[in-house]
Image 1 (spheres, helix red, strand yellow):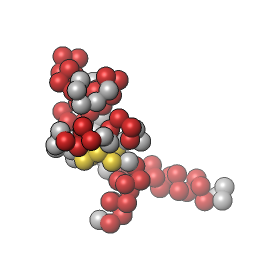
Image 2 (cartoon, helix red, strand yellow):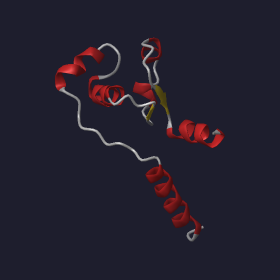
Image 3 (tube, helix red, strand yellow):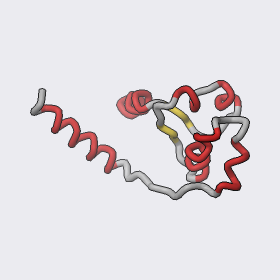
Length: 93
């Protein structure tokens, strides 16, 4: 198992690099208040950054704050999912 793990980790990093992720800066503090009623204050910057960058997916383990009924009802133009859900989707494609 110790021999296989580094190969799997290397493959993971290569797959992530192939996705060509874009790294963006922090959103303007003034724009964060529009999400006060949607998500916790400490997570507003993550949601705003994903929306501002026009990301198709926001991948997070924070289901408590990001996969809520309030966010679902907000009908945001982004799919919020866990890493597992994202990898299962990619596997289907």
